[in-house]
Length: 292
Image (cartoon, rainbow, N blue to C red; front, top):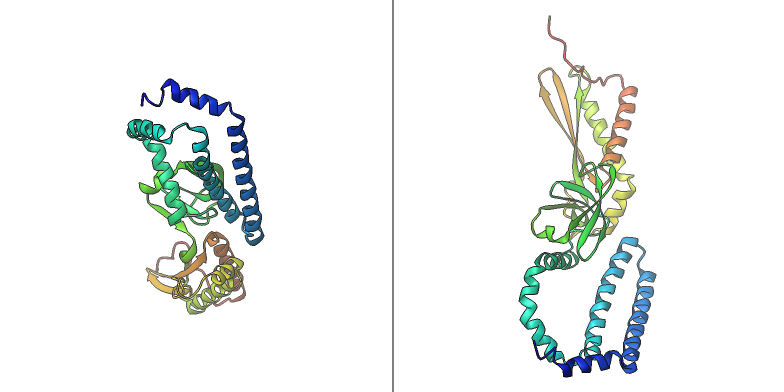
């Protein structure tokens, strides 16, 4: 360590810092790397339309350029790589212990980039918070908070959490092969009415609304038979239950990720219209009448 701070090494370092050759070499290296980054981004942007993918691509490329710049500039500005390696070897362990949390966050970022438990645009739940991922930085992830995991509306708050949480918290996400979420509606029908027609109406409306959903068509178009894990669960079904003096219809269906509230709203609206047009279907009273 003391050898690194010797007068000879410090003098050599000062000479290099004040040397025009070192500044010229640094300028050439930085200019070439910036030019390379610009060319790569232009080529990538011509083939990438998704703004979230563009942002992730740009962020990753910037990190790579920084690493390459450090690798190329260290020999220019340091008088002896051996001496700095000795210095870092002595103090490296203590430095890592002091900055442990920071490095765990960097490791979490690397895990997110490689394993991709979530990407920008996903709706996730981590711990007791839920939201849509809007940015993934080296140290933290930011999400737009929503009032519920599925179908919730944004609260207007942006939440930042360290990337280290991917190693200690359970993460739930709706994306890729599981791009649909399970939903269930419950309808109380008067048993004296045509509950079978009500069940058939619910199933028909759900199938029609799902087929006309733009989000569903886009997700189905991006999946193939080998990675589509929910192909056998997308058909809606209605289960009937007799509870006291009521017939309860349980509609079970899959909704595209992030579209549960919209799809549920359309199903309810169409069902109410259908019930109004079919007098044989009657809702059960809130409290069934007691027999005389």
